[in-house]
Length: 114
Image 1 (cartoon, rainbow, N blue to C red):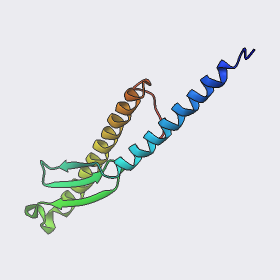
Image 2 (cartoon, one colour):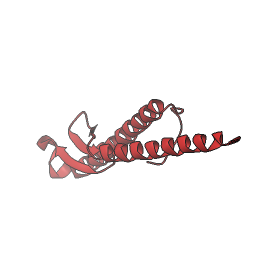
Image 3 (cartoon, rainbow, N blue to C red):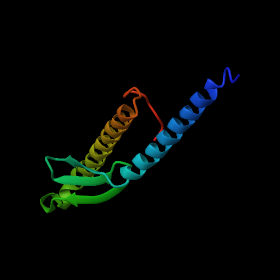
């Protein structure tokens, strides 16, 4: 009598899974605001702390390199530390995304916009 109605149940299941994925992705985006990474340059003479979402929160410079004749070196070290923090943040974000995909039974290398 209700032949072919199985598709409605499948559709409802797919919609539920899509909503669950959306909710988990939202939570992951929120978590990215609180997970921090540290980038360094010059063997730790300059360090930068940033969230995985990319917001810089702290810059530390060893006072020993703060001499006028080393201005360009300090600037280069600051840029290098920021780039290192950005690279670490991107790597951590990818790790978190892969973990989420695996938990949801999706391919770990599936690229979703975060």
